[in-house]
Image (cartoon, rainbow, N blue to C red; front, side, top):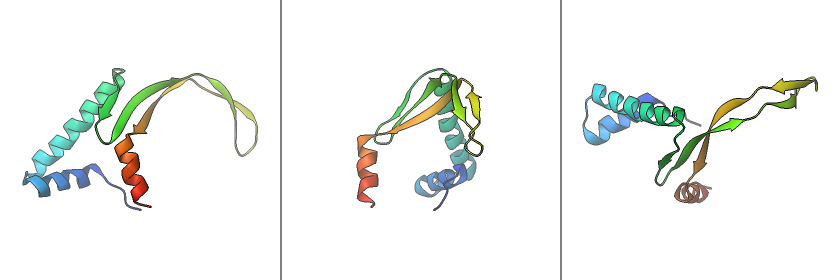
Length: 96
């Protein structure tokens, strides 16, 4: 299993479009900054053919420590979620 990093994405931009390394890194940073800023502002981010990201608010609840079984309070929090598009799901299904 490989991990794709920002550097990998920037290198792909550089190789495909002949950008300088600095410009390709800036482009990747701008893209992720825009996505992050939109999510923090409560907006949903939809990337056609890939999927959508949004922030969900989860209420506080009682959970259990998986090792000890002792009940514990899980605090309220916001979580980022991703929902893949139909096209992306089909692409993944074909890989099997």
